[in-house]
Image (cartoon, rainbow, N blue to C red; front, side, top):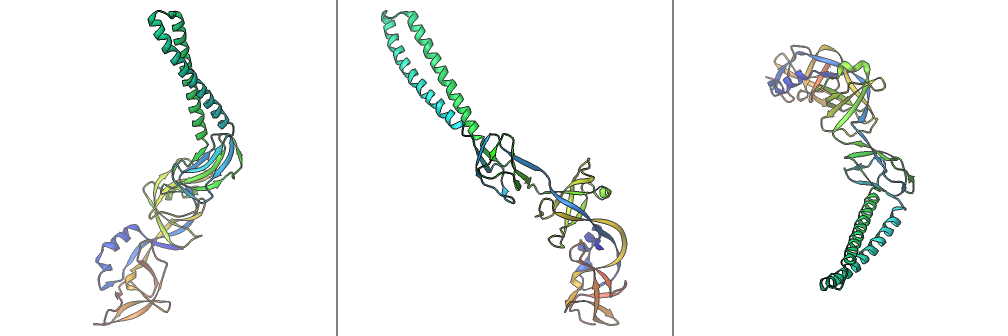
Length: 329
């Protein structure tokens, strides 16, 4: 059973003069017992990087576990049918440009002849209309080329947000279709998503604090603040978003122990400044009569309140203890 002090006690202890005085009188305090509830670390949001073209993956710049920024290119899809179309349209644009240039020159000569009365007005109007048609055809071809170039640019698959790559679904050389998933990304927005059994719903409330431990890594206790509790259950589990103080470097899907309260009791709580350790044994200076002696004590695991221990044995309420090095009066 892992034991932790109540948050209110931790605040009082940190601000009281007890932790700073040379001596203190041992008293019992109310502490809460916790037990671990198995949960899972999930990404607060997941995103899919998808192909918008049908083609071949010619570049793949990511692997599982990589961290990417929003807008980073994660892959490039080449559609071999687009480049020939662009070249064909460019050739048509070049031809239309030459025709427009020639027609403008002819129309300029015709305009001079028309002014001198040597050129039919109907013929001049016909050639001016033909020039406008050529310019319109050229503008249409330019827009068509611009559309194909933009479509070719859709071959760049970009990360939608700052995220970590959790799965890559293709390799270089793969043939993909529009909408096919290239990679799955887990966002990095400072939130972790917890999935807990439904029976522990009463322990979660928005704005409340919980304690998390990652047993696969270490026994360090991390405090998290609940940002949101989702109204719908997912596979029989309640889902909540939490912000972990100092961040949390964990794998998506990694097991997490969420420490749920199971009851209150009275216990002796001691600031760590009063404890010394020699040869693996913990000692506290206790006043006996008019002098201080080092008395061995048995301590529990550290509490959520940093710098505080629970004394299992070796001290009683009313004992006067002193900081290490205190001389007898």
